[in-house]
Length: 286
View (spheres, rainbow, N blue to C red):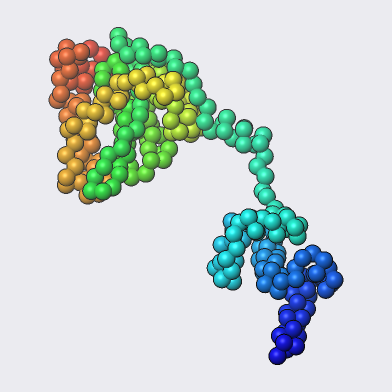
C-alpha cells in the first residue's frame, strides 16, 4: 500500500515538473517537494500566461479562486511571482501627456471680480454655479447664470446628469441674449469646479470674447450672490409632485419666473429684476 502511494506521489511530481518545465532535480532543489505547492505554482503560471502577463496580484487571486477554487493570499502570490519571474506588464502613463492634458482641460483663472458685487451695470458681470435638488429619492442638478447688475437669472439648465453639458447649456442661453459688443464687455465669474475649468466651458467664453474670473479655492463667499439665490430657489420649490426631470424643470422655471418677474427686491428700488431692467436699461446695440 505504501509503495502504491509513493508511486502516485512520484507520478504527480513528474506531471507537475512537466507543467512547470523543470527537471526533477531542479524541482527538489527549488524546494517544491510538496505536490500541492507545485500544483499551485503550475496554476499560477497557467493563468498568468493565459492573460499574457497583464494581470497583477489581486487579479490573480480572484482568478484562482473563481476558476480553480484555490484560496491563496496576496503575499504568497507576490512571493511566487518574484521567485518565478512572473513580472506583470504595466501600462505606464506618459507624464508629459498627462500634464499637458490636465493643463488644457482644467486651467483656473484669477479672481478678477474680487467680491465687487455692487454698483454694476446690466450685463457687466454674470455669476454662475450648480446646485443639487432631491426629489422622490432621485437627484436633479440646476445650473444658473445670474446678472449682478439687475439680479436677474439670465440662463438656466436642469438635468439628471451633472456633466459639462449642464453648465454649458445655461451659459449658452445667457450669452444668446447679448449682442457681440455686449459679450466683449462681459465678465463671467464662477468657482473652480470641474465644469468651469473644463476646456469646453472656457472655449465657449473665449469664442464670445467674454472675460473669465474664478473664486479663490475653497472660498464660497467669493460667489455669494448665486449661493444666495440657490437658498431662495430651494425655499420656494414644491417638489412633492415632481416625479420626472421634466416635472422638476417646470417647477424650477416657475420659481425663476416668480423671482425674475414678481418678487420685488429692496436693492432694486423695490422692483423685480425684469422690471428693474426695463426701467433703467434700454436695449443696446439692437
